[in-house]
Length: 535
Ligand SMILES: [Zn+2]
Image (tube, rainbow, N blue to C red; front, side, top):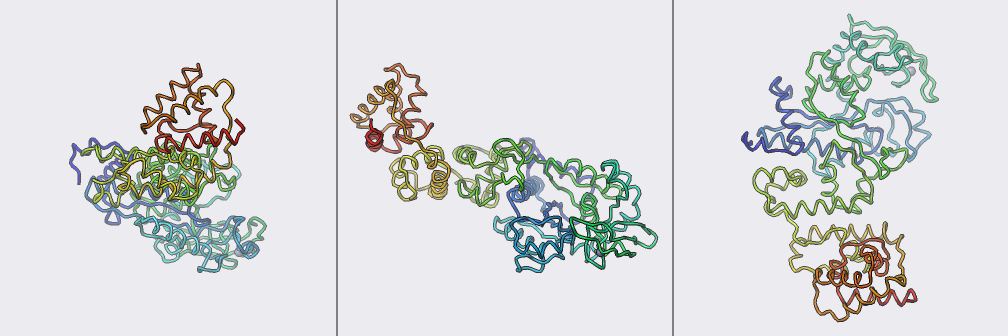
């Protein structure tokens, strides 16, 4: 538990959220005994970076809340598995089988992989594996168990009792053609088992039931024509999703939930419904969506997204967590080319962490990224190697290698303190090797210096041949001198050097690179390239 003076110095966003949550709990005590946070999952597809981001961010709010108040929290990971199968992702096996089940709840649709009891059973199992793999703590809740087990019954009856009032807040948000006949309830047809082919034709609040007709064709599926009266409870009907959100909040007494920016209006509407039902809605924040490098929204159908496994090819898990931690309210670009920059920013955080004291230390993103180990490791979270991703990438490029040990041989020469950073460097080197192989090697073009810059290149190479030391700054100064002596634009001169020795447009500080790669090695590389290119 933190004292008020320390609390007043906390700046990072999870603390702000935790303080909001704490304030809201002064008005109501938590229904479930502890502050309850929730995150939702749609089991029509596999968990992805967005799932990871939402659970990680919610976990950071939990952590901040416990730090501030000393109180425990709960997290429900809720899977909407009574939702119907709306479409069939192209990469699923057994497409023909799945087509027959279109419109049926995901928990009643067979698992196309034949491993679990249902389609959503498969996706729920992958979700839990995924969350467990990253060490998240949560309580898993499957929607169909809450509906069919009667957990939602009280809430469902309240929705039926407040049927017209709920309709009156939802209808204005719908397009005119969707208002006709809209009902919060979506009955599940007892004959064909489908949920997207039914409509409510009568309600009977006095006996807790409704009458439905299964007569709405859905995506090529012909409705079975059945008509019957059914109770609204025990999973015979579900509610549409904005009402569903309110139903969960009402039933469990959810105190905190965050959501994507595209769901701001839905969250407002769900909050109104929750109040109509007689419960205070949770507090929470919206987060911005991830964009691709062209600032376009990432979508599965466009295929411009990135998986966690893809990220982990080019950067550490901590770098992904750092990216997600930074500014949830700012639209950030999620693409391969940006990973080195995020990794380098994270390395700077490690470099600076040791010097932070007291409250300033609590504001470091490392406090959240390493939330499990921070208590034991806070004093040792550091990085002294002085090598960033960008420099390593050029070393790999100059070595033109795929071997971790070849890179290590060079790195060890550079700095004798480096073994303390072995764990970070191993991941960094592997990431740089992968990034080089996939993103740089295919685009390399070595070029001879043009006639105007050739004398400066020769001057620098002659200087290197005579140079006995190994000091990045001295080398950098000599490179400046060479460029200036021949009246060259210095940026252009450095570009000429990179094109010659690395086949790239840009590089790190040339002096730093030569210090790392070696003076004689750089000279040999430059001479070999000059000979190879016919210069
Ligand atoms: Zn039917």
